[in-house]
Length: 159
Length: 270
Image (cartoon, rainbow over all chains, first blue to last red; front, side, top):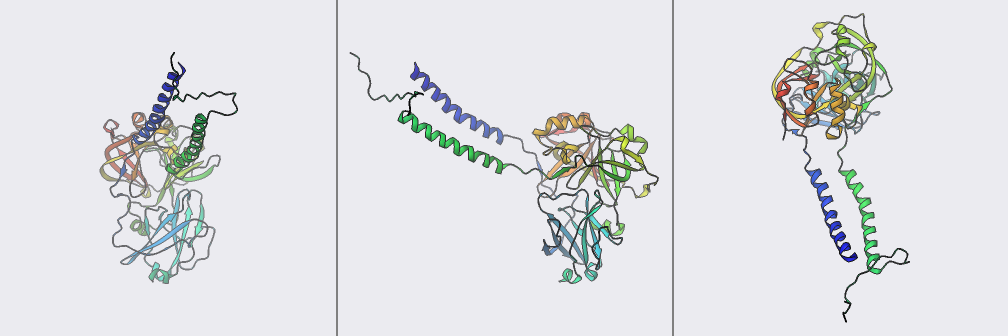
Protein backbone atom coordinates (compact mmCIF):
# COMPACT_ATOMS: atom_id res chain seq x y z
CA UNK A 1 0.00 0.00 0.00
CA UNK A 2 2.79 2.41 0.91
CA UNK A 3 4.69 2.01 -2.35
CA UNK A 4 1.71 2.82 -4.64
CA UNK A 5 0.84 5.87 -2.48
CA UNK A 6 4.39 7.16 -2.62
CA UNK A 7 4.47 6.68 -6.37
CA UNK A 8 1.19 8.54 -6.73
CA UNK A 9 2.40 11.41 -4.55
CA UNK A 10 5.62 11.63 -6.56
CA UNK A 11 3.64 11.92 -9.79
CA UNK A 12 1.23 14.50 -8.29
CA UNK A 13 4.11 16.63 -7.03
CA UNK A 14 5.96 16.38 -10.32
CA UNK A 15 2.88 17.61 -12.19
CA UNK A 16 2.11 20.38 -9.66
CA UNK A 17 5.77 21.42 -9.57
CA UNK A 18 5.64 22.09 -13.30
CA UNK A 19 2.07 23.33 -13.62
CA UNK A 20 2.12 25.97 -10.89
CA UNK A 21 5.19 27.90 -12.16
CA UNK A 22 3.85 27.61 -15.73
CA UNK A 23 0.44 28.93 -14.61
CA UNK A 24 2.17 31.80 -12.79
CA UNK A 25 4.28 32.76 -15.80
CA UNK A 26 1.30 32.44 -18.19
CA UNK A 27 -0.81 34.57 -15.86
CA UNK A 28 1.84 37.28 -15.73
CA UNK A 29 2.36 37.16 -19.51
CA UNK A 30 -1.37 37.27 -20.22
CA UNK A 31 -1.88 40.55 -18.36
CA UNK A 32 -3.33 43.21 -20.59
CA UNK A 33 -0.70 45.87 -21.17
CA UNK A 34 -1.76 49.49 -21.06
CA UNK A 35 -1.47 50.89 -24.56
CA UNK A 36 1.22 53.39 -25.45
CA UNK A 37 0.50 56.28 -27.70
CA UNK A 38 3.07 56.23 -30.49
CA UNK A 39 1.94 59.33 -32.34
CA UNK A 40 3.68 62.61 -31.86
CA UNK A 41 2.51 64.41 -28.79
CA UNK A 42 0.55 67.40 -29.99
CA UNK A 43 1.34 69.19 -26.76
CA UNK A 44 5.07 69.17 -27.26
CA UNK A 45 6.58 71.49 -29.74
CA UNK A 46 7.96 70.70 -33.13
CA UNK A 47 11.71 70.62 -33.11
CA UNK A 48 12.69 71.41 -36.63
CA UNK A 49 16.18 72.47 -37.66
CA UNK A 50 17.53 72.51 -34.13
CA UNK A 51 21.05 71.48 -33.27
CA UNK A 52 22.60 70.54 -29.96
CA UNK A 53 25.18 73.21 -29.09
CA UNK A 54 26.23 71.75 -25.74
CA UNK A 55 25.06 69.74 -22.80
CA UNK A 56 26.26 70.37 -19.25
CA UNK A 57 25.62 68.80 -15.88
CA UNK A 58 27.68 71.33 -13.89
CA UNK A 59 25.43 74.36 -14.27
CA UNK A 60 23.41 73.62 -11.16
CA UNK A 61 25.05 72.70 -7.88
CA UNK A 62 21.99 71.98 -5.70
CA UNK A 63 19.91 69.83 -8.01
CA UNK A 64 20.72 66.91 -10.37
CA UNK A 65 19.71 68.71 -13.54
CA UNK A 66 21.48 68.54 -16.90
CA UNK A 67 21.04 71.42 -19.27
CA UNK A 68 21.29 71.27 -23.04
CA UNK A 69 21.46 74.23 -25.35
CA UNK A 70 19.82 73.86 -28.70
CA UNK A 71 20.25 76.37 -31.42
CA UNK A 72 18.61 77.06 -34.71
CA UNK A 73 18.56 79.90 -37.20
CA UNK A 74 18.41 82.96 -34.96
CA UNK A 75 17.23 81.32 -31.78
CA UNK A 76 18.41 79.40 -28.73
CA UNK A 77 16.46 76.97 -26.65
CA UNK A 78 17.33 75.20 -23.46
CA UNK A 79 16.18 71.76 -22.46
CA UNK A 80 16.57 69.85 -19.23
CA UNK A 81 16.88 66.35 -17.93
CA UNK A 82 16.61 65.57 -14.25
CA UNK A 83 18.09 62.79 -12.16
CA UNK A 84 15.74 60.09 -10.93
CA UNK A 85 13.85 61.12 -7.84
CA UNK A 86 14.06 64.85 -8.50
CA UNK A 87 10.65 66.41 -7.92
CA UNK A 88 9.62 69.94 -7.02
CA UNK A 89 6.08 71.29 -7.03
CA UNK A 90 5.22 73.54 -9.96
CA UNK A 91 8.82 74.12 -10.98
CA UNK A 92 9.25 77.06 -13.37
CA UNK A 93 12.29 78.08 -15.40
CA UNK A 94 13.41 81.71 -15.52
CA UNK A 95 16.11 83.51 -17.45
CA UNK A 96 17.98 86.35 -15.80
CA UNK A 97 19.91 88.31 -18.42
CA UNK A 98 23.37 89.77 -17.84
CA UNK A 99 25.53 89.44 -14.76
CA UNK A 100 23.28 89.13 -11.75
CA UNK A 101 24.30 88.22 -8.27
CA UNK A 102 22.56 85.22 -6.82
CA UNK A 103 19.65 86.20 -4.59
CA UNK A 104 17.08 84.33 -2.55
CA UNK A 105 14.15 86.00 -4.25
CA UNK A 106 13.23 86.05 -7.88
CA UNK A 107 14.72 89.21 -9.49
CA UNK A 108 12.23 91.65 -11.01
CA UNK A 109 13.81 91.31 -14.43
CA UNK A 110 13.58 87.50 -14.44
CA UNK A 111 11.75 86.30 -17.52
CA UNK A 112 9.56 83.24 -17.33
CA UNK A 113 10.63 80.73 -19.95
CA UNK A 114 8.07 78.08 -19.04
CA UNK A 115 7.46 75.07 -16.84
CA UNK A 116 10.30 72.67 -16.08
CA UNK A 117 9.44 69.74 -18.30
CA UNK A 118 12.11 67.41 -19.69
CA UNK A 119 9.99 66.87 -22.80
CA UNK A 120 10.03 70.57 -23.68
CA UNK A 121 12.77 72.92 -24.71
CA UNK A 122 12.24 76.55 -23.85
CA UNK A 123 13.15 79.46 -26.03
CA UNK A 124 15.61 81.99 -24.65
CA UNK A 125 14.97 85.71 -25.12
CA UNK A 126 16.16 87.23 -28.39
CA UNK A 127 19.13 89.16 -26.97
CA UNK A 128 20.58 86.18 -25.09
CA UNK A 129 23.61 85.78 -27.35
CA UNK A 130 24.69 89.38 -26.68
CA UNK A 131 24.23 89.52 -22.92
CA UNK A 132 24.42 85.99 -21.57
CA UNK A 133 22.70 85.30 -18.29
CA UNK A 134 21.69 82.59 -15.86
CA UNK A 135 18.90 80.08 -15.50
CA UNK A 136 16.85 80.10 -12.31
CA UNK A 137 14.66 77.21 -11.19
CA UNK A 138 11.77 78.50 -9.09
CA UNK A 139 9.07 76.48 -7.36
CA UNK A 140 5.90 78.56 -7.47
CA UNK A 141 4.05 76.24 -5.11
CA UNK A 142 6.82 76.50 -2.53
CA UNK A 143 7.54 80.14 -3.47
CA UNK A 144 11.27 79.55 -3.33
CA UNK A 145 14.25 79.48 -5.61
CA UNK A 146 15.34 75.88 -6.02
CA UNK A 147 18.66 76.64 -7.71
CA UNK A 148 20.46 79.31 -9.64
CA UNK A 149 22.74 78.21 -12.45
CA UNK A 150 26.30 79.31 -12.96
CA UNK A 151 26.44 82.31 -15.30
CA UNK A 152 26.29 81.45 -18.99
CA UNK A 153 28.45 84.04 -20.74
CA UNK A 154 27.37 85.36 -24.12
CA UNK A 155 30.46 83.75 -25.66
CA UNK A 156 29.32 80.30 -24.59
CA UNK A 157 26.11 80.73 -26.47
CA UNK A 158 27.70 81.78 -29.70
CA UNK A 159 30.67 79.44 -29.87
CA UNK B 1 8.30 -20.76 -2.29
CA UNK B 2 7.88 -17.19 -3.68
CA UNK B 3 11.12 -15.29 -4.31
CA UNK B 4 11.53 -11.75 -3.04
CA UNK B 5 12.79 -9.49 -5.86
CA UNK B 6 16.32 -8.31 -5.06
CA UNK B 7 16.56 -5.42 -7.57
CA UNK B 8 13.94 -3.23 -5.83
CA UNK B 9 15.54 -0.28 -4.06
CA UNK B 10 12.78 0.76 -1.71
CA UNK B 11 14.49 3.00 0.82
CA UNK B 12 12.36 4.16 3.69
CA UNK B 13 12.83 7.33 5.74
CA UNK B 14 13.00 6.66 9.45
CA UNK B 15 13.03 9.83 11.50
CA UNK B 16 14.81 8.48 14.54
CA UNK B 17 17.71 7.02 12.62
CA UNK B 18 20.89 9.09 12.82
CA UNK B 19 21.50 8.98 9.10
CA UNK B 20 19.01 8.90 6.25
CA UNK B 21 19.22 6.21 3.66
CA UNK B 22 21.84 7.15 1.00
CA UNK B 23 19.35 7.74 -1.86
CA UNK B 24 16.95 9.81 0.24
CA UNK B 25 19.82 11.78 1.82
CA UNK B 26 21.26 12.69 -1.58
CA UNK B 27 17.87 13.74 -2.93
CA UNK B 28 17.13 15.89 0.12
CA UNK B 29 20.58 17.54 -0.03
CA UNK B 30 20.10 18.40 -3.72
CA UNK B 31 16.57 19.68 -3.09
CA UNK B 32 17.69 21.89 -0.18
CA UNK B 33 20.54 23.38 -2.24
CA UNK B 34 18.19 23.99 -5.20
CA UNK B 35 15.52 25.61 -2.99
CA UNK B 36 18.10 27.85 -1.30
CA UNK B 37 19.50 28.90 -4.69
CA UNK B 38 15.98 29.62 -5.94
CA UNK B 39 15.12 31.51 -2.76
CA UNK B 40 18.07 33.81 -3.42
CA UNK B 41 17.64 34.09 -7.18
CA UNK B 42 13.87 34.54 -7.52
CA UNK B 43 13.60 37.68 -5.33
CA UNK B 44 16.52 39.26 -7.19
CA UNK B 45 14.98 38.47 -10.60
CA UNK B 46 11.55 39.69 -9.51
CA UNK B 47 12.97 42.87 -7.97
CA UNK B 48 15.07 43.68 -11.03
CA UNK B 49 12.20 43.04 -13.43
CA UNK B 50 9.81 45.40 -11.61
CA UNK B 51 8.76 48.58 -13.34
CA UNK B 52 9.94 51.68 -11.50
CA UNK B 53 7.15 53.60 -9.87
CA UNK B 54 6.85 57.23 -10.80
CA UNK B 55 8.19 60.06 -8.70
CA UNK B 56 5.22 61.59 -6.94
CA UNK B 57 4.90 63.38 -3.63
CA UNK B 58 2.17 63.89 -1.04
CA UNK B 59 3.37 66.37 1.57
CA UNK B 60 1.38 64.64 4.30
CA UNK B 61 1.23 66.73 7.46
CA UNK B 62 2.57 69.91 5.84
CA UNK B 63 0.17 72.74 5.15
CA UNK B 64 1.00 75.71 2.95
CA UNK B 65 -0.87 78.80 1.86
CA UNK B 66 -1.72 79.54 -1.78
CA UNK B 67 -3.34 82.50 -3.48
CA UNK B 68 -5.00 82.56 -6.87
CA UNK B 69 -8.27 82.56 -8.73
CA UNK B 70 -10.71 79.79 -7.84
CA UNK B 71 -12.41 77.97 -10.69
CA UNK B 72 -15.06 75.31 -10.19
CA UNK B 73 -15.42 74.10 -13.78
CA UNK B 74 -14.94 71.47 -15.03
CA UNK B 75 -13.52 70.40 -11.65
CA UNK B 76 -12.33 72.70 -8.85
CA UNK B 77 -8.91 74.20 -9.47
CA UNK B 78 -6.84 77.21 -8.50
CA UNK B 79 -5.16 79.46 -11.07
CA UNK B 80 -1.98 80.84 -9.55
CA UNK B 81 -0.41 83.77 -11.42
CA UNK B 82 3.18 83.18 -12.45
CA UNK B 83 5.62 85.97 -11.73
CA UNK B 84 7.88 87.32 -14.45
CA UNK B 85 5.50 86.71 -17.30
CA UNK B 86 6.43 88.50 -20.48
CA UNK B 87 3.41 87.61 -22.52
CA UNK B 88 4.97 88.27 -25.90
CA UNK B 89 8.04 86.22 -25.16
CA UNK B 90 6.20 83.41 -23.44
CA UNK B 91 3.69 82.92 -26.20
CA UNK B 92 6.41 82.21 -28.69
CA UNK B 93 8.43 80.07 -26.34
CA UNK B 94 5.95 77.57 -25.03
CA UNK B 95 3.68 76.20 -27.67
CA UNK B 96 0.04 75.96 -26.63
CA UNK B 97 0.65 77.45 -23.21
CA UNK B 98 0.05 81.09 -22.37
CA UNK B 99 1.96 80.34 -19.15
CA UNK B 100 0.25 83.20 -17.33
CA UNK B 101 -1.04 80.89 -14.59
CA UNK B 102 -0.17 77.63 -12.99
CA UNK B 103 -3.13 75.32 -12.45
CA UNK B 104 -3.50 73.44 -9.17
CA UNK B 105 -6.25 70.82 -8.95
CA UNK B 106 -8.26 71.02 -5.72
CA UNK B 107 -9.58 68.02 -3.80
CA UNK B 108 -10.86 67.34 -0.30
CA UNK B 109 -9.16 65.13 2.30
CA UNK B 110 -9.49 61.36 2.14
CA UNK B 111 -11.36 59.89 -0.82
CA UNK B 112 -13.41 62.95 -1.72
CA UNK B 113 -13.53 65.68 -4.29
CA UNK B 114 -14.03 69.25 -3.15
CA UNK B 115 -17.70 70.04 -2.54
CA UNK B 116 -18.50 72.28 -5.49
CA UNK B 117 -21.73 73.61 -4.03
CA UNK B 118 -19.85 74.84 -0.96
CA UNK B 119 -17.28 76.78 -2.99
CA UNK B 120 -19.62 77.94 -5.78
CA UNK B 121 -19.95 81.49 -4.32
CA UNK B 122 -16.17 81.90 -4.72
CA UNK B 123 -16.07 80.75 -8.37
CA UNK B 124 -13.94 83.17 -10.43
CA UNK B 125 -12.84 85.12 -7.35
CA UNK B 126 -9.39 85.71 -5.89
CA UNK B 127 -8.92 83.50 -2.89
CA UNK B 128 -6.31 82.40 -0.39
CA UNK B 129 -6.43 78.85 0.85
CA UNK B 130 -4.37 76.50 2.91
CA UNK B 131 -3.80 72.90 2.04
CA UNK B 132 -1.40 70.06 1.44
CA UNK B 133 0.54 69.71 -1.79
CA UNK B 134 0.38 66.64 -4.00
CA UNK B 135 2.50 66.65 -7.15
CA UNK B 136 3.84 64.54 -9.93
CA UNK B 137 5.73 65.83 -12.96
CA UNK B 138 4.04 68.96 -14.22
CA UNK B 139 0.80 68.30 -12.33
CA UNK B 140 0.07 69.92 -8.99
CA UNK B 141 -2.86 69.33 -6.64
CA UNK B 142 -3.88 70.74 -3.26
CA UNK B 143 -5.85 68.85 -0.65
CA UNK B 144 -8.00 71.43 1.08
CA UNK B 145 -11.44 72.03 2.62
CA UNK B 146 -14.12 74.58 1.69
CA UNK B 147 -13.74 76.24 5.10
CA UNK B 148 -10.04 76.76 4.46
CA UNK B 149 -10.74 78.88 1.38
CA UNK B 150 -11.08 82.62 2.01
CA UNK B 151 -11.90 85.36 -0.50
CA UNK B 152 -9.27 88.05 -1.18
CA UNK B 153 -9.80 91.75 -1.61
CA UNK B 154 -8.18 91.64 -5.03
CA UNK B 155 -10.43 91.39 -8.08
CA UNK B 156 -9.01 89.15 -10.80
CA UNK B 157 -8.69 90.51 -14.30
CA UNK B 158 -11.02 88.13 -16.08
CA UNK B 159 -9.53 89.04 -19.47
CA UNK B 160 -6.21 87.47 -18.45
CA UNK B 161 -7.76 84.20 -17.28
CA UNK B 162 -7.17 81.23 -19.59
CA UNK B 163 -9.80 80.76 -22.24
CA UNK B 164 -10.87 77.42 -23.68
CA UNK B 165 -9.05 76.49 -26.85
CA UNK B 166 -10.53 73.68 -28.94
CA UNK B 167 -7.93 71.13 -30.06
CA UNK B 168 -10.35 69.11 -32.15
CA UNK B 169 -11.74 65.63 -32.08
CA UNK B 170 -9.26 63.02 -30.87
CA UNK B 171 -9.32 59.31 -30.23
CA UNK B 172 -7.16 58.49 -27.24
CA UNK B 173 -6.29 55.25 -25.55
CA UNK B 174 -5.24 55.09 -21.93
CA UNK B 175 -6.26 54.31 -18.40
CA UNK B 176 -8.81 56.09 -16.25
CA UNK B 177 -7.15 56.92 -12.94
CA UNK B 178 -8.24 58.92 -9.94
CA UNK B 179 -6.17 62.04 -10.08
CA UNK B 180 -5.54 62.32 -6.35
CA UNK B 181 -3.96 58.91 -5.85
CA UNK B 182 -2.13 59.00 -9.17
CA UNK B 183 -0.53 62.37 -8.50
CA UNK B 184 1.01 61.24 -5.25
CA UNK B 185 -1.29 60.07 -2.49
CA UNK B 186 -0.78 56.43 -3.48
CA UNK B 187 2.26 55.10 -5.18
CA UNK B 188 1.67 53.38 -7.51
CA UNK B 189 -1.80 54.87 -7.86
CA UNK B 190 -2.56 53.15 -11.11
CA UNK B 191 -3.28 49.84 -12.87
CA UNK B 192 -5.15 46.82 -11.47
CA UNK B 193 -3.63 46.74 -7.94
CA UNK B 194 -5.01 50.22 -7.35
CA UNK B 195 -8.40 49.67 -9.00
CA UNK B 196 -10.56 49.28 -5.88
CA UNK B 197 -9.10 52.43 -4.31
CA UNK B 198 -9.48 54.42 -7.55
CA UNK B 199 -13.15 53.44 -7.85
CA UNK B 200 -13.84 54.64 -4.33
CA UNK B 201 -11.97 57.92 -4.85
CA UNK B 202 -13.70 58.65 -8.16
CA UNK B 203 -17.11 57.80 -6.72
CA UNK B 204 -16.25 60.19 -3.88
CA UNK B 205 -15.80 63.04 -6.33
CA UNK B 206 -12.06 63.02 -7.07
CA UNK B 207 -11.69 64.13 -10.73
CA UNK B 208 -11.28 61.16 -13.11
CA UNK B 209 -8.38 61.55 -15.50
CA UNK B 210 -7.54 59.70 -18.69
CA UNK B 211 -3.86 58.89 -18.43
CA UNK B 212 -2.39 58.52 -21.91
CA UNK B 213 1.06 56.98 -21.76
CA UNK B 214 3.30 57.79 -24.68
CA UNK B 215 6.06 55.82 -26.30
CA UNK B 216 8.18 58.92 -26.77
CA UNK B 217 7.33 61.62 -24.33
CA UNK B 218 5.62 62.27 -21.06
CA UNK B 219 2.17 60.98 -20.15
CA UNK B 220 -0.78 63.20 -21.04
CA UNK B 221 -3.48 63.88 -18.45
CA UNK B 222 -6.99 64.66 -19.66
CA UNK B 223 -9.80 65.53 -17.30
CA UNK B 224 -12.87 63.56 -18.28
CA UNK B 225 -16.19 65.33 -18.64
CA UNK B 226 -19.39 64.53 -20.51
CA UNK B 227 -20.09 66.04 -23.92
CA UNK B 228 -21.89 68.92 -22.20
CA UNK B 229 -19.05 69.48 -19.72
CA UNK B 230 -20.51 67.79 -16.64
CA UNK B 231 -18.66 65.53 -14.19
CA UNK B 232 -18.68 61.85 -15.18
CA UNK B 233 -17.51 60.29 -11.90
CA UNK B 234 -20.43 57.88 -11.53
CA UNK B 235 -20.44 56.76 -15.18
CA UNK B 236 -16.77 55.75 -15.50
CA UNK B 237 -16.47 53.44 -12.48
CA UNK B 238 -16.74 50.19 -14.48
CA UNK B 239 -13.83 51.19 -16.69
CA UNK B 240 -11.33 52.39 -14.09
CA UNK B 241 -7.83 50.84 -14.39
CA UNK B 242 -8.71 49.15 -17.70
CA UNK B 243 -7.32 50.04 -21.11
CA UNK B 244 -10.00 52.26 -22.67
CA UNK B 245 -10.41 54.13 -25.92
CA UNK B 246 -12.26 57.42 -25.83
CA UNK B 247 -13.18 59.58 -28.77
CA UNK B 248 -14.15 63.12 -27.96
CA UNK B 249 -13.44 66.81 -28.24
CA UNK B 250 -10.21 67.88 -26.60
CA UNK B 251 -9.89 71.38 -25.30
CA UNK B 252 -7.21 73.23 -23.42
CA UNK B 253 -8.00 75.61 -20.60
CA UNK B 254 -4.71 77.09 -19.50
CA UNK B 255 -2.67 74.06 -18.50
CA UNK B 256 -5.68 71.77 -18.23
CA UNK B 257 -6.51 69.37 -21.01
CA UNK B 258 -10.16 68.39 -21.01
CA UNK B 259 -11.72 65.51 -22.95
CA UNK B 260 -15.42 65.92 -23.63
CA UNK B 261 -17.15 62.67 -24.51
CA UNK B 262 -20.32 60.84 -23.58
CA UNK B 263 -19.25 58.02 -21.19
CA UNK B 264 -21.48 55.52 -23.01
CA UNK B 265 -19.13 55.84 -25.99
CA UNK B 266 -16.05 54.87 -23.95
CA UNK B 267 -14.77 51.57 -25.29
CA UNK B 268 -12.87 48.94 -23.33
CA UNK B 269 -9.81 47.89 -25.37
CA UNK B 270 -9.79 44.11 -25.83
